[in-house]
Length: 459
Image (tube, rainbow, N blue to C red):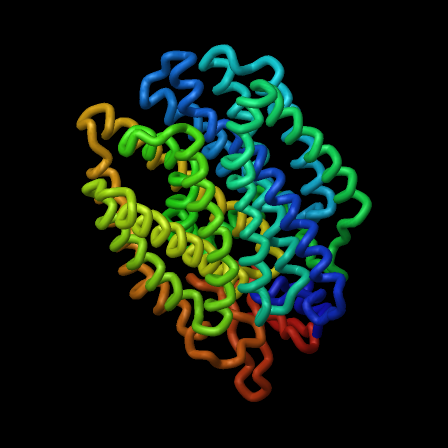
């Protein structure tokens, strides 16, 4: 049965899932570390945004653009990187992404920080670090069985805490040792990790490798309903997290008059709480279903955004509002990829992850620009936070209706041999042979494949 499922790429199945022992955990820890280090590099410009604004006399919009460029590049880059990971595997792709990220990190630290144009150019290529997410999800997915994937991918997602490393260390290192220091340190750490990853990382046994061309795989991925439903949800959940992780220091400095160091510390607290709650979101999704978890997290996000909109006193109400949003967005991010792990075909998890991850990153690209523009025009951030509440509320309604109807099998609590694709028909439409309970799948040629016997008959 395993070989047939590998060929068919049934959703929710991975031939390596049956393998026990410590090795899956070793792979999970190592790939999570790589994700965190690449996100550390990806977020290097954010804590320095206020400093560059003052030294280069940037407008609010230009400062927002500076921290948003790596986000959008890292987001869009996840689409091809995810598809390439399906083909070549995480053992190759993660060291490559880590090594390539070293180049813009060194450029920004040693040469490219004296003008906005140089910073934008370096930030553009710094976005490569953000694509590491699309490498890790399919890699982890192949190592764990369906009933453990929500938690495993949630643990991997905690690697987004690399942004907290940047928040806690970048400004301090610049103040103590000079502007190049955090960039050089990050580059050295990435180089060491790339070497370790090449030596230690291994692909899951029997990993399903797609053979069709990249364009055809991406087109097939675009026809999966789960791709766009999860993308919409992740744009809100992870997009909200990214937006605050890059713009919160500016918001706190402008709205409450905090020092740069104090604002960066509070942003780090926001990031760390979201990081801790992401595995919790995956764990809850394994037990309660991702749809239920998503609805609650999105409603909570809307409520806390409305609380913060009038800029209440920072202690305690403002702090509670931001920490509440951090927890809710972290849980929602974990639940989104629990949904992907359940519903995406095994040999397309990377491609689906690329599209969904891109949506999340783009969701984080827009709000800083909107917040900067709104504040520049109105002198207040209230409208931006109200817009976040409206979007989160609409996403909760979408999840409770459209996504819930599509994901009923996952929410029923019944055993699921291979979770169904959310969406319509071919390619990879699937039904069940009722007398035997055997999953069957229709491929692009209209041929039904029996997953148990590997036999084919004309549909």
